[in-house]
Amino acid sequence: MRLMGILRRLADNQQPQSLANYLRRKRFSAFRSFVAHLPKPVRVLDVGGTESFWRNMRYTDPRIIQVTLVNVTRQPVSLPNFSSVVGDARAMPQFPDGSFDVVFSNSVIEHVGSFEDQARMAREVQRIGRLFFVQTPARSFPIEPHFLFPGFQFLPRTLQATLVKRFPLGWFPRQSDDQAVEAFLDCFRLMNFEELRRLFPYASIGHERFLGLIKSYIVRGVGMSQVQSQQCVA
Image 1 (cartoon, rainbow, N blue to C red):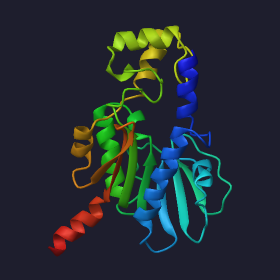
Image 2: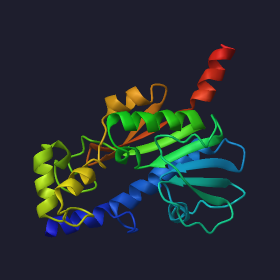
Image 3: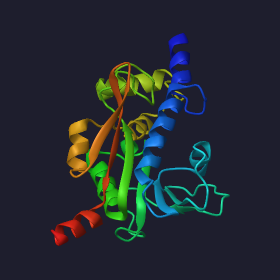
Image 4: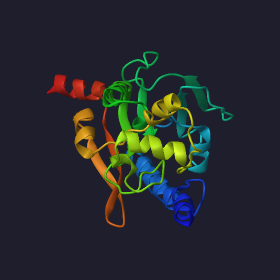
């Protein structure tokens, strides 16, 4: 239990001194550099994000950025340059091709379902954004970031189900109903480098490290509308 408490403190991105918050701020600095050359205000589609995230990053100036949040439920917004819409990351037909300067997504693609579902989200991200910046935890990192249990992602499904039914893990209370457990576990699918390369063939895939190990991947690149226009020019 003491180890779980230590891991929770390290992984809590709401704590200013936590590892998660340090990596998040470092990552966001990379995002700011990525979009620094774009005309202002930059039009951002944040898939799965919240206004509080941008507040915490201190990046809400309406002269610099305009953010549309898309989530399965409407999110509270109070700033004039923020809006919230309901949508599914795997299919966002309400947004035309290349309609945002950049699509941003932080720790979301691992939650949309199967690899096929992740591929659908990846296609939408690349379709809608002229640029895109996507972060996701690395499957190879030994501590699973949601359950904070060593090697949880490598365990057989039956053992995962047993653990979440018997113990509160990470940020979650114990799960009781068998059907609910299966649906719950379907919400977590960490990815490896090869899978990301398949989904984002034209992107640059960087990584964040902790203690020499890859903790997460950062995928950034040019959207399909821009790739196609460059191909036409060529």
